[in-house]
Length: 260
Image 1 (cartoon, one colour):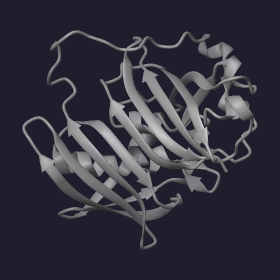
Image 2 (cartoon, helix red, strand yellow):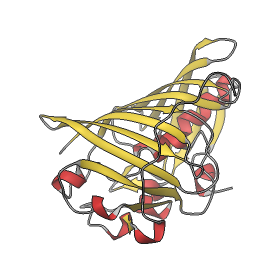
Image 3 (cartoon, one colour):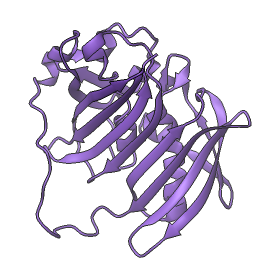
């Protein structure tokens, strides 16, 4: 198993309660990356619903989460139907709620072949070897996360320009394949798109992040595109998408965050 599997593992301790221990290897500065921190909750909700794929995931980040610390996950089933189930999970640490996830689960292959296919094409990117590793950029904050995620950026996104646009490639650093469960994590591991407009931003905390998972990804690098076209009073809206190695769109995201 890869690092993501082992470092988001959960143990059931009650009918609706799990425990997990998050790793500081996924930190951005002193805090856990948000996409990583919510992944253990998604794992618990998948077990509770009995359905394989998170189709829609919304997470509200209430307080920072620390790595190398035990956490509790409290869950509740909101509704279950023939093809979909919706559930809620709360990650607690040190006696305080840290984040809340509401997710709808189903089987993304259950309606394969129904209707026409639509989807935006992937961005045109230079080969991975011609892109710039995020690890080589000045971020203004320590990034243990990059021991777990390999992330490279289009050279045009490295220096401040006219658009808050980030494009690049991403995969697990240990070579493990992405899955429907890990896609909500991947949409939260790139630098904030505002860095392509204003330069180094340090930590841009997310208030709320929604991810729609569209299909199971094929093995290989994921292509990514994230853009902020709405910034007001230090609050930014960012829209993103991921495509798999076949060029098929596998996830879309939208978040509101703070420019500190």
